[in-house]
Length: 190
Image 1 (cartoon, rainbow, N blue to C red):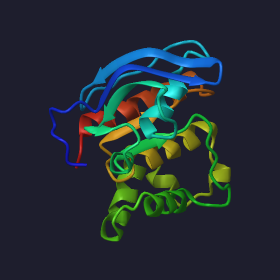
Image 2: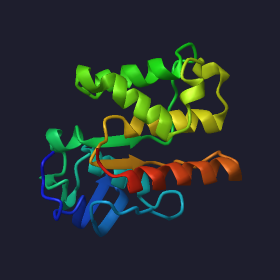
Image 3: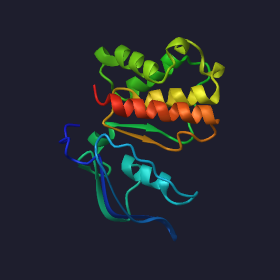
Image 4: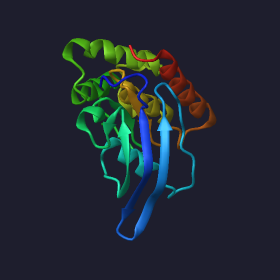
């Protein structure tokens, strides 16, 4: 994406989403600037995951309007510039960390000439360089979460969306994930 740096990363206006008779989101207005680190807090069912799905273009709003990276909600080019870590994810246990990242780099269409560097950068950022050739089955929950963050950060996306990135982690794991997220923000685009 080549939207202006002054263009907000996220700009939503009175967005709503209903599924049949169930209102999942109502009247959400939100502007997030580039380089900002923002967390959505709320109880289960408050619409946090629905908001992420709208930003990713996986669902369309029932009402309201918005832009992501200067493009309308659901724009494919904008979606390609977003890194994403879902709340529930699983990687094939027999794959090594480097293989997981290589697969996702291919899926994300990271240019072939940049893939090896992007994978090395992701491994370094999430602290898994020494475990790059270990199978996912040998990883703790915290290490798997780090790998998931690495996948989300592959190729230096313009926007990173993380759904419950610290759920099921112990206090040390939560601290580690927060530090990785801050380091990625502070590093900025490459």
